[in-house]
Amino acid sequence: IGVPAEDREHFAALAHTIGLGFRPMQLLGRVAEVDDAVSGMLAYTGALLDRRRVDPVDDLVSHIATTGDDAGYSREECAGFLAGLVFAGNDTTRNQIGWMVTDLVDRPELWDAIGSGAVAVDGAVEELLRHRSAAPAVARRAAEPVEVGGAVIEAGSPVLLSLWGADTDPAAYEEAADVDPVANAGVPHLAFGHGPHHCLGAALARVELQEALRALTSHLAPPALAAPVEWGLPIGITGPTRVPLLVRARS
Image (cartoon, rainbow, N blue to C red; front, top):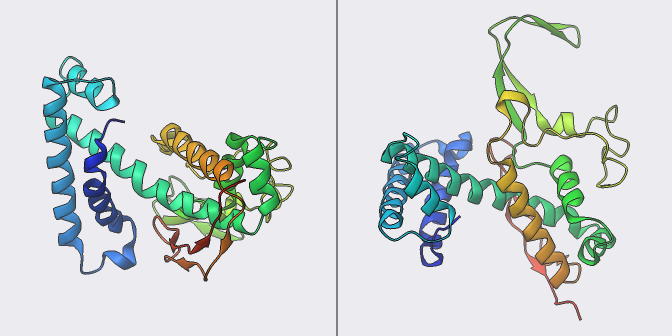
């Protein structure tokens, strides 16, 4: 993307605070912190774009900086786009990597199969996204009356749709409860949503997750837990908050 390495700790801290906005129970009493973090992120991305306009390099930030004006986008719009990109590419992906690793701790054979290339990393990522995504549910509003399980949801009613429930539906997946990249490959998942609400960052997330999983499984032998995993609440964007691992390099 082009965020300088020396700045990553700074924007990661901002992204973590902004992420509270997607975790309602943690947001209580911290709205001002989130607002300040959003302002800080926009100030940072705006300044970075200004630097890249003067001194562009071969990265996405420079392309946004040097073509945004020609495309009719304001400085504020470009800064907001970049802020959203670096936030989403940090917070959600970090949580999803945590889910992938904790899923694979109990499946050392699959860890080894991914590391050796016997199981394709892209297929493994899709299956791990299906099995447990960083977004457990999405909120929507019914456009028209619909009957579900004998209950009628009236038009205009708010509904909370479980992505986890849909993605582990035994009527849709052959091995719904397990992680099986082969048996479950024929049915798409909803980890990135669907239709007009499909995640704009899905392509970036897939690249990040594939590269992370490829690096971990190829360089490390199957890890083991050193202590119990600590979890965030299953609402908003969620995942493990601490995964203590025992790891060793592959010989």
